[in-house]
Length: 237
Image (cartoon, rainbow, N blue to C red):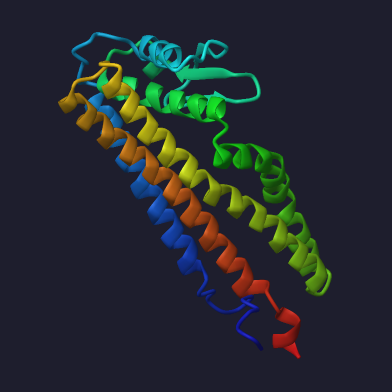
């Protein structure tokens, strides 16, 4: 019996799942720890996250983006389709260097959008493809496995899942660039002093690890699918 059929044997590809889980947990711990630490450090300017965001947008001539408060913790995001910069409750009214850093990061995305930053446009275009791929890929793979391992259905599922992996990879330069823009804006606009910018950099660097972890997890999941199902018909011949 080929090792690919794990009904009665240990599945060695579970190691990939364990690695992915560990990477994700470490990244989440890092960002929560950094944000919690620097959320207790008040900025010398006394600006809130929302005020800093509005200053950055205005200084870049972006007057058609609104700044709104949303519920949750670290649920901050910029919506390019509605041109709304959403800041979480822990960021919107906070004067901490962590909150200002997160707000500036989201402004980085708004600046990317205004400047026509290609990776952001590509990521936006990939959103529906990635959503469909991540949701339907497993349907094709499971149905293909049920139907005597129909390789055509399984291959379609793996290709669809690859779209979700591509989205995660494209996300990396978008997020790193947004953080770089944020740090530049915070210093050039005098919102934070040099030591404060250094502290904010630690928060944004920790946040960036979550995107690296998401990409690594997606790649490991894809690798596992390929190991389990890729070319199965040839192995069973």
